[in-house]
Length: 357
Image 1 (cartoon, rainbow, N blue to C red):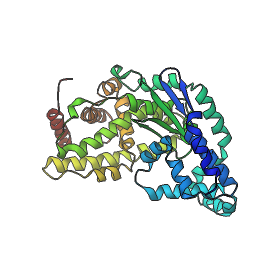
Image 2 (cartoon, rainbow, N blue to C red):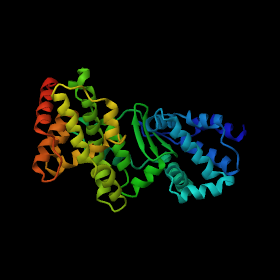
Image 3 (cartoon, rainbow, N blue to C red):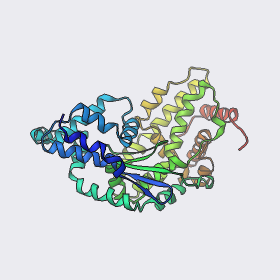
Image 4 (cartoon, rainbow, N blue to C red):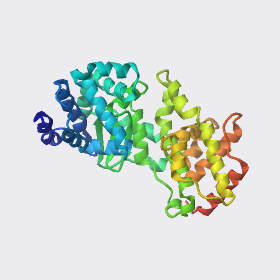
């Protein structure tokens, strides 16, 4: 394997992690490793399996790929192939054909290639002085109850130069640079606020122990609450922007009523004594968004009905979220509603898991 692919992995970690204030660290190791890797590809050196695995083993890349691709190694393999084709000169004709066909991974990787200088300048500046920290907390607090207006001790922030998303995990927050660029064009700090929201929002202890028969439905409602409330920090400003508001509407708002009606059908089956709906069905129903669909739609309907404070007050309770959505939907002329049968069943579950707050 070319020596150039391995030398830098031994040097990066100590050099590329900086402390910020007393509580945060900003790590750019994964992003810098990507540019070392693509420098070799530009010299037409192959991307070996060993080099790729070493790249994926970098902590931020490991957290990010696990969150975004999970066990889907085939898709991650296609992303690796796109990197090699986009950067190696010998594949230029294939690169052009893939871009002309608008194949997503190739479009995404080529975007990183075109914005490399900008991305390098950004991470260097953020490592020295991440100026979004105050905005990150302030915007997150806007969609959280006062009890969650806290700070995360020893927060780890990392940047990667793959993918198009951010993820908030126990290991810290990881941002893809493409997602940072897109969100900064709308309102700087909103992507960071969304992920910080996940770090700060707590879950009601009412659900520490649940009936397995209820788990999948509660999980679907929890995901809708989790992402729907966090989406108020970044998706709401996006809708007010001309940048990609049409795209956001097309994948988060337009299909949401249909999703709610199908969830309603699953609730009615359970209310009639039928089997619990498999978790896989809910994942497929929500297009793998992990709750963004229909969560943002539900949160938006609640806010539009004037119940923002009630939403924040119950930001830890998925059943309260569903019932508040139903209350808000009844005030709307167009919002999808749960059926009376489902509403009664949700009320029964709320009573079942009710505990003193």
